[in-house]
Amino acid sequence: MTLTRLLGGDRPPETDPVDTESEEEPAAQEPPSEAPAGRLRRAGAVALIAALVLGGGGFLHAAHQLRSAAPAQNRALTDTEATTRVAGDVGSALARIFSYTPDGTAAAERSARTVLDGRAARQYDTLFARVRDDLTAQRVTLSTRAVRTGVIELDGDEAHLLVFLDQTSHKGASKAEATTAAAQLTVTARLEGDRWRITDIKAR
Image (tube, rainbow, N blue to C red):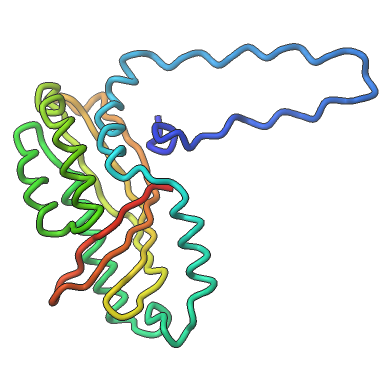
């Protein structure tokens, strides 16, 4: 089960249009069988962490910004060094705050305090507190990596990015039943001193 589906992003398959000249109605399709309960439980940890970034609509907003931003203001189109820096900082930060071991959730929270600010920090603190005990009790390990990070707009000390993540989770010591998922996020970051901090995160 992909992270997109866990976030409710899947759409029902389109059916062929009904022939209005035919008097016979198409046979009702059987509903798809439910996923096994075990599979849902294994994917549960990823769903819980995904809730931290649930927002929706961000991708379309980011695409509009890319089309409408004035080239003279959008340094993402002209400043390669600054663009590479913000992309690296944000991609690394997301991988750190969404990766943990059963006994290492505190490390992820410490990382969050150094790389998150504003709305993103409040979301993370509130929702991680709700799921921390369950993740530890279930011995869940989650690994996240940013596979692609694109800077949509870079204007002064603020940046808007589109980030593609891969996530892998498993319970206990065995990795035989690992669950993988993907996510697309739009991220807002602000430069503070010599470090970019994430202020907002939304899932597509």
